[in-house]
Structure formats: structure tokens, C-alpha cells
Image (cartoon, rainbow, N blue to C red; front, top):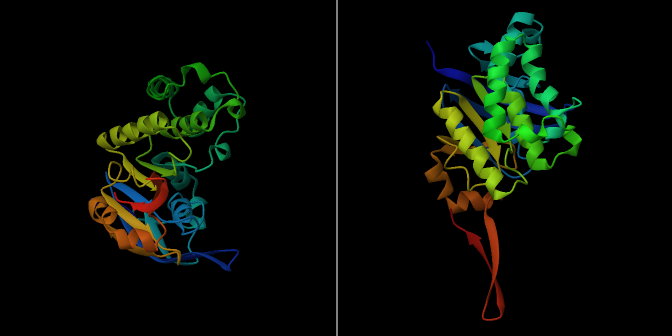
Length: 264
């Protein structure tokens, strides 16, 4: 049995047929891996994740998932579509895209009920997730009443409750306080340890080493320019600099402001 979950070859994609978003992308992701995709804004990270989730399809090239090519025709097959949506869960960068029910409780229950999961199993998983993510006091609130960090945790819960084999997250820690970020990182590491494949796009290079076995670096040309172990990628100062991934710090010393890059 092959360990490959996703296999993308020579993938090209342009929005409206003219705004290039992916160019000649090759990527192979195996079961149980932790994968990070890093790159500047507009480099193609979110587009790749949406393609892996079967929301958009290549203009050229192929993307296979679980051995089957992802294309519109495949999702016209109700059995395949339901099976794929059960196996692959995406947490969007903007949680407001995911949260549309009157209450947090209903949002978390929505996905598994639509997929026909057993109610007893849904309830068990629900209780586990609200404890892990600390959502117990938010269940009867409307999503629009929540902070960005609370919304993001609800979005993660609404995806994890279907128990996908693959969890895809688009900037899951963006705009979050350090403690909430820590909780989410710990959760991702725990989910991976249980066998789940984790694919994350992020700008936060401080979390990359913990959540990655392999890091893919996107350039402004919408291409993967390097892939490798996080320790190797994070120490490549020239690579990070040319792809706008260097953190710049300013500090005062003897009355003067000094600006310098931050090393990982």
C-alpha cells in the first residue's frame, strides 16, 4: 500500500485564467508527515492548500489524492466526494468563512452531521475537543461575538471533529496571542502523534521547526524554490531574505536605533 496521500506534478493555476498563482509546482506528501509551506504574501500558499482540499483544480498538471486525480468530475461522484471530505479537513485563514451557524455549538456539530457520522461518536469527540480547546463557555455564543483567537479555535474544532486523516491549516496562528499560539501548536503536534497528516501554511517561522518534517518555500514567482528539513531551511539566511521571510528587529543602543535581521 502506498504511503502517498497527495502527489502534485507540474501544477499551474491562474485565477480568471490570467492571474498566475501556481507555476510548475511539484509536491508529494506521505501519510503521517508534518508539512509546512512558507512564503511571502501572494506567493501561492493558500492556493496550493485550496487545491489539495479539492476547492480548485489545476489549469495544467495533475493533483492526485489517495491515488485518484482531483478534478471536478471526481467530485460529481457522491461516494468519492463524501469520502474525501471525511478524510481531508481544511481550516481557512479567515475563520469567518467557516463559521456561519447561529451558535458555536451548532457550527462544531454541522460538519459531522452533514457527513452522516454516528451521533454517539460525534458527542464523544465534541466533549474531547471543547475540553482541549477551552471552548466550554462559548458554546451558546454567536461566532461574530468571538475574538479572532476564539474564532480560530472554533474553526479548528469544527474541522477536527470529523476526525480527518489529513488536517490542512492556512495561517492557523496569525494574529493570536502567545498562549493561544502555544495551545494550537501543542494540539497539532498531538494530532500528528496520533497518526494524522498535518499540512500548514505560515508566516511565523518561530513555529516551523515544531510543526514540520519538511518545509516547502514559495517564491514571489509562485514556485517552490526549495524544500528540506526545517533546520536546514531556517538556517539559510540568503534563502529567507530573498523570499521576504527575514524577520527584521529594531532596538535602541546608546541612544541610536539599530535595525538587524533575526536569525532562527
